[in-house]
Length: 238
Image (tube, rainbow, N blue to C red; front, side):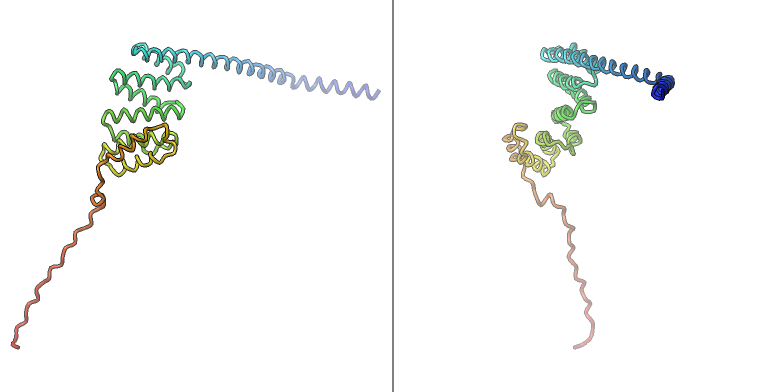
């Protein structure tokens, strides 16, 4: 009899608990299922978005290769608007910069590369864009812009390429000691193999005008020889 009462008490407790918390349990299940469905749908949407972005980028590459500027600009704008968070947005900027240079529109190429450098691209793409931008600045005779862009950039895999371009910029600015130092760092960089033409860098270093060490040192103040003041002779007989 006691066991039967105990079971009834347990059932009553369960009913009371369900009456109080059942709505929360059902709500939690509904939310959990909804989140699961939403997660699956989001993954499907993201995959579809990436596929569409990839297809658009393939079209862009064909248009760039064909030199079709109007179509390429429209496709690049679509990629950078609709797929701005994908890696294809940065790659589209690089592709358009190349096409602009082919069309002798170097300032448009600069703008395209600045969009990559200042945008949401990954670090690798930004380094590629920064290097290409620096080379265009050299082409535009803007050596100081190269220095402003590359000085302080710390990337072991791009250090040699950056160093060569910096050396060229320093040379153009007449900062020969810094140019020599930049070239020498490239030549001793173990990662420079395959990233720069070391023989060309060697030639650039050897071709630098001889640095006048004395001229580079600060001039010492001129010493003024003391002028002896004649001592007046005193009068008197010997």
